[in-house]
Image 1 (cartoon, rainbow, N blue to C red):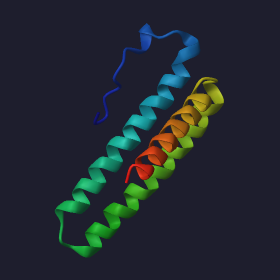
Image 2 (cartoon, helix red, strand yellow):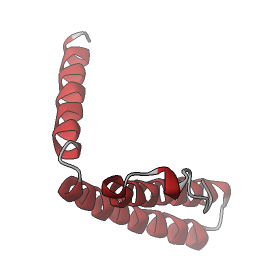
Image 3 (cartoon, helix red, strand yellow):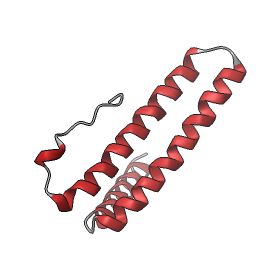
Image 4 (tube, helix red, strand yellow):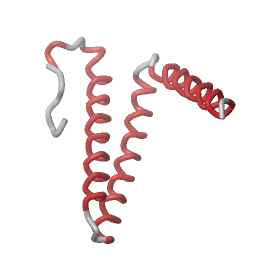
Length: 99
């Protein structure tokens, strides 16, 4: 993403704008997490690695904050997250029973 909003604001309905703004925030945070973790993996300097991973961890908190906002503003978001969680749980149980 790297600081470019991936949609045309004028094309959105007013009631969807805030949800889309939050989703862009989530995308930006995930982008930052990936960048910082990749940079940490590139260095042998333990202090630099530690700082990049600490910053990446902070970005994960920001994702959680945006997720919470999205659950408040988007009535479909929370049930969809729960459904996804249940699907992964079911798949992980079937995978462990196949071992």
